[in-house]
Image 1 (cartoon, rainbow, N blue to C red):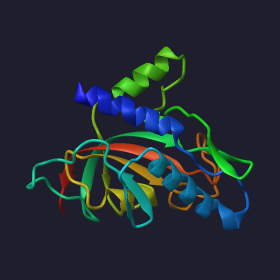
Image 2: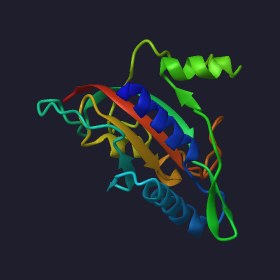
Image 3: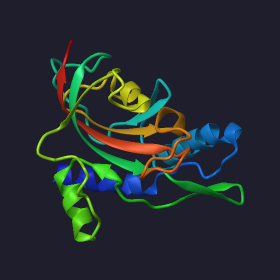
Image 4: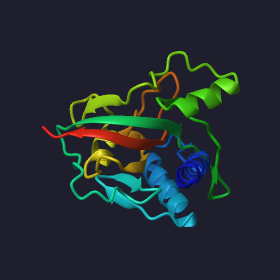
Length: 192
């Protein structure tokens, strides 16, 4: 029951998160940082800022003191969900724009989106976690920074400003200058 409750809270959190809707280069990152911290504070979510990535653990961290800690150069196996963290500025205040998962290797996310007639044909397989080396360029900068210090077994929400995500270049699913949210479950950590 706690897992379902945590997942529900996580999905609600993701759908309400904010990002930047301005194109003014000098305000994009400050606005995104403000929106992220405002969201976390307004929802009374404990967080830490690690290397400019905001990190929230929605459930207790792994209690195993012997669980490996992620360091630069380690290979990790993760299940993840990716969301646009969008907001608009209206009359000087930030207003959230609800969003749905844009990319995930979690079965329940893919199944849910298929029921909504969304195509997940090109998404990664959910049969195995994504394996990547932290700091090698296989992951975006924000993931590399946000995963360091987490432990095998942790679930973590990583709120990442656009400069540490996909920046000024839009992808097929993420507009330029968009902050993002990754929800990550760390399955394996192979220390190098």
